[in-house]
Length: 429
Ligand code: ATP
Ligand code: MG
Image (cartoon, rainbow, N blue to C red; front, side):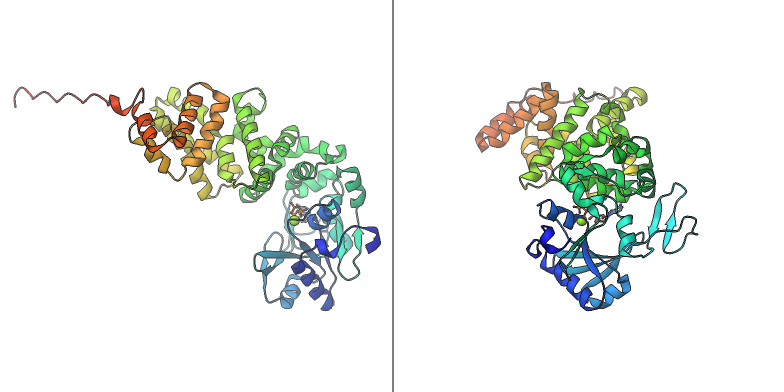
């Protein structure tokens, strides 16, 4: 499509991305913008980053730019750094021969999963190797044309998520494409065609072959992009939640349960926060996903192993986190935050005497209080009462706070534990 037939204008494109395209063109290479940025501009949306693809090899790319770093093993590519903006430059990917021996360049597992994808090829092959039809449009800064290799324009018009090639083969090559399908459907407000969607129901289990670290990256994109609720519902529909969160299995079949409602509410809150440009932490959402599994496991430890409630809770935290990180690697700083939010649920009800002002100073107080409010909305009863108490406490004057802290019922400062009676002297002393 020549410039007159498509809406992609240079003013929509980052200056740094244009610089990269021109530099590669001037050095005699082909270079294009491709993927999400072209798609988003076609949709009238602002791209969040710009990806470039070229026939130059990573080494040839590096030779053209001083500010360039080569990264990746499974998929080698170049990052060109411009202050805070990074332009990703990849070399055209080619096809892997059907019964080719594994090499340093290309490799696949017994399930057909590509574990190394560094076989280079032509622009045609590169387009066939991309995931969805709307992600295979290429913009040239040499003649301002857009090349649409897979009917991406049509998919955008029809608002359809459509995989390139045979869906089962493509999902086996890279099971993460199943997650990408629902993510794009939610984000772009499109429908997944039956051809692309149906196989997911039976292949979702392949996600267990994906390294936990990669799934953390996907988790962030799925749930912290402002479309978490819709994404969650689609994942539920296609059976993609259990492979990622095995401990949610039981609650997912009960949409009326408080487990389900807590998750739904936290997703709504997360979307609202993101769309209002408020801060969110991946820890909060994960803490909410796993709260009831944690409570349930903790209860089981009490009844089955006779542990003290608090000990059972601590042990359950480790068990639940340990199970989850087998699927989604949770970086230490976030798992620490999750533990703190959970532990504070235990401490916030014990709010009398000096404890209230101390808890207020806790670095994780705000998150833990928000979490308690959420639980209060769903559980009502004591939880709601404690949450409301904390709301009032924070709004109160210093004087009123002191009064609140001292007016406690059980465990209040005014009713200290009776002093333990002195030990009677041993008769023979
Ligand atoms: P986003 O807006 O989320 O960045 P995107 O389409 O740009 O969406 P990226 O993950 O940045 O997604 O990938 C850039 C492009 O690389 C995609 O548009 C697609 O063409 C290709 N791509 C990415 N991941 C895969 C994959 N797993 N399989 C095939 N092609 C992929
Ligand atoms: Mg992108």
